[in-house]
Image (cartoon, rainbow, N blue to C red; front, side, top):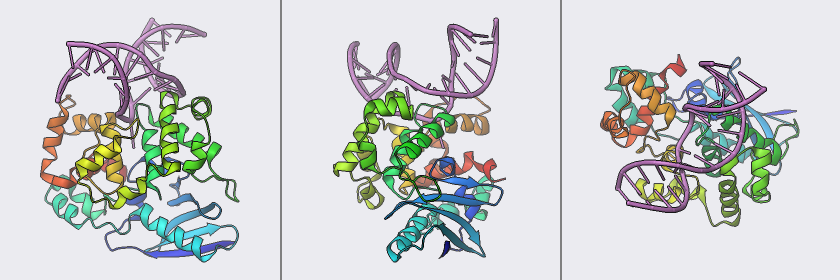
Length: 293
DNA sequence: GCGTCCAGGTCTACC
DNA sequence: GGTAGACCTGGACGC
């Protein structure tokens, strides 16, 4: 059987733009069905359940497959979906700034800037670590291995993202040999152990009172997290002060704004300075404009 | 088939 | 505070 749940969306919400805001929609347990514009995710709870998320008549519809779900699971799926799609984000100030720039006028008209994220910061931490110093193809491989080899199985055979406990229960050799994580393997072990023991509470970063610079320092205490990784995660917890420059963003910037000539990171930062604390979101939207054609 | 380069970087040692 | 070198993997590319 299938249970359908519904969520109202804010007026400035665009399902397609939010789902395809960055690469996360391609990382398990997310799956994207571009033909029918549906997002699939395996939610955790009492037991993992697969759900198809789509837009229907201006609202979000979540079709949960399998046995009837209890009220606790139902509430968790609704809460997680709000979080994933960032339905509660207020981007009005960002839109005011981008509307002043002709080339970024599309951002407000397509309601861009809602970056898809995972239900937990822990999942985003692990996935961000999988993006460092490798091709996007390898990132997808590592995440797929983590999900399929360590995540609990739902009724339809899909797997949820592994818990910190499940990740802490395997060895460094497992990460090297089975996950194909290479030199990142000890980082995964340490991160999982800290999260499972409660020593690291990444979820608290969502509503931390710390200034962004301090929060970034805290994130960089996680082994394997440097400037790029910390600033990427900051974006996912709703702070856009950092640009999270990586080879993709740098290359795209050189091509679009610097006649394909290499320039310094400081010059890139200065270019987006006018967007203030929204500059990280401004460069991301600017560099991914064509994704929304 | 083989070697090299590099991709959605970071860490450590050293200066 | 800045920099060089090492680090896994796997696909692309040249030969």
